[in-house]
Length: 106
Image (cartoon, rainbow, N blue to C red; front, side, top):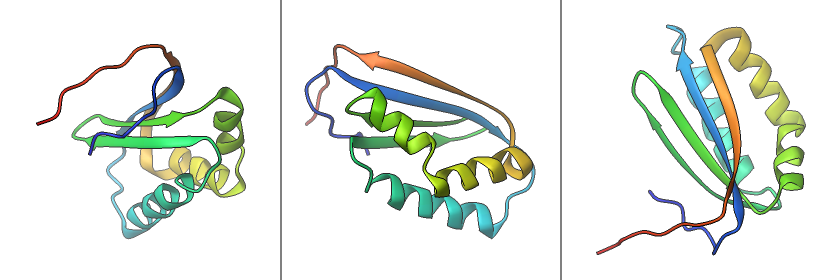
């Protein structure tokens, strides 16, 4: 689904990742938990995700403070640690200001 975001400006956090060969039930469960938890965070606007060889998750946020608060959320810190230890060969996080958006929908 394409996230329903408000009129700009807002922020996008782009998480690009390459997974290890470890594909266990724990990863899927933790990913579900993080998705439910992030939706409860103040300043969260939406999320989009896709995965092939390269995974992309883009979350949208009202402001930089909301992004910082999510980054240091205890459950998210735990998930980040497990990701580094087990599930990701590499990743990169980028934070961008969205100053314009447009789209099409039938």
